[in-house]
Length: 394
Image 1 (cartoon, rainbow, N blue to C red):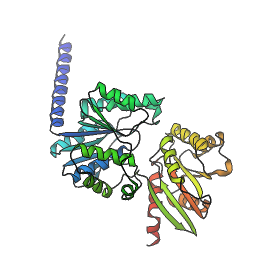
Image 2 (image 1 turned 180 degrees about the vertical axis):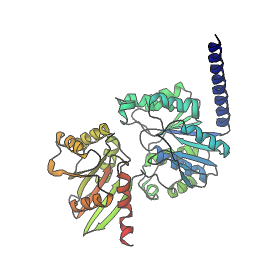
Image 3 (image 1 turned 135 degrees about the vertical axis):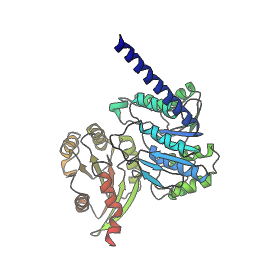
């Protein structure tokens, strides 16, 4: 009988503690007037950074947290701090960021959603963030093992972060009717941004290749909060891009000219194909086209999707394989009718050796698009390409 009493007492204490913690968290949330929760398949980190920059231009005191390729905390003066994790990423990390932001007395907290499982996405929004402004960049076929298997399933999962009685900004087009339906159920107003208001000159003002839809999406959020468009755009153009942002490096070596595009972060088939079409649209017939596929051994389903898409929808001269499990990926490519003489299997030597083999296999004029993963050496090889010309001067 005594032991039962002790158990009841412990449970009561735990319930009291949880209630106090919840109420304390809600108080901290209320101390942050504007909370922007950003979700979607692609572009979350880029849009988070753009919104943070635009709002800084409007005089807001901000904290921006991106998970992206490498997790970062961006302060109101634009300085960045790496987020060091002792273990694997966990959504509870968001609570510590909210606590920190409340102590900083910020006007705006911009949080990139880090949850994948549908139930965790809902918890992040409904219990942790309770956004005043939601952002859904797009809905594409990725992480199908968790959110799939269909695009409709992914849409349901991602719409778990549609806020209640708030504003939602999105660049989604195909599933927009479903997004609007969910938003209506939440009494939330939807604003769509497809990039139509952004001209080529404005895009050229960025130091990297930014998508028009991302720019317009971020601008609409900033405009809704009273920031002047020109001021917001000017600050966005100056902001530091995410490690995974699409960048072009022009390499001249051994009488060859190589245009290297770092698209490793665009690791779903649809985004990869969209980038490839944009890049190759202006290429001449004499320019060699190489798809550089970087794979991780724990992302074989993604590798399979990319190989199938490359084989069926992309016009290429060569497919180069780097990273992990390249033997397995080569088998996938052969089974999908990629000719063996068009496959260059490099594997995972250091970046200098990968670069050397790519350079040797390249024609006088070549374009290389890196896709698949920033991990497993992808980020390191991208940095090698980006800094190659600088190395030659030292």
